[in-house]
Length: 320
Image 1 (cartoon, rainbow, N blue to C red):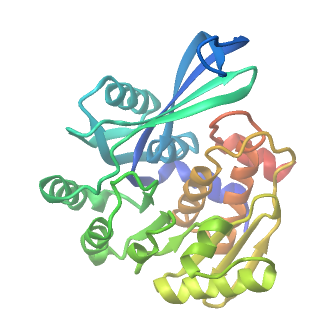
Image 2: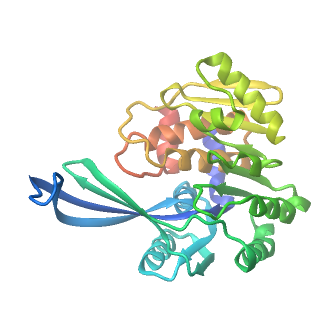
């Protein structure tokens, strides 16, 4: 298959992203002294910046790859929620599915000095969405899913994704046999039964299968166990510098890494599930989609900070 032809079809695809919306806040500065009050560095703040995280970054990846995206998630009645929604809108993501609640917007704040992270602090309420809010979210998904080619569930274990949420998504999309991809989280694998594909990293796959992954043999056992346990069509295990392993009922496909340089793996999982789902929606087979996702991840890990890839960068990666 010509991968360029699949990538060109991204622009005609529309993806719904459901999950935990996160605002990544960065405080940049310098350290020249230690505090006299405690043995901690004093950071002289120079600037701060905001980036999209979690499901918001998945949607950002989708639009960066040339497709259309809409998000369904929750923010708080706070400045962080307004900033996150504004960032998404400016990126071209449809935000009608963002619900405002009394819980705070999830914010990860990283203090960076001399290109090193000094500390990170998180503001969040990770209780599961339930009751009226859950019903409202599922009603909204049911009202619009027919206009989408696939659904991505981005689970960061911040409360948006529960067993009830997954069951509701599967029920709403059953008549169309919608392609549903899940970026999973440890402790939630029981939620994902019946989805199309999950994309765990090695640690998540080991936890989900309850098998310690030490080598190719134990990796194969874990992949097959997850396929059976979840009843899904495929399990795509991301393996860092060792590439990826795609488990399907017909067997396993090993894909070596496409990264030339690795500077920062932040957000690489978001890129993988975005590119993989888009490629499947554009007509690629699972194995072809995994190769495309592998190249997309190779682009973003070669840049510092949460990055995204573009169709042009993807084509250059294949043709270079």
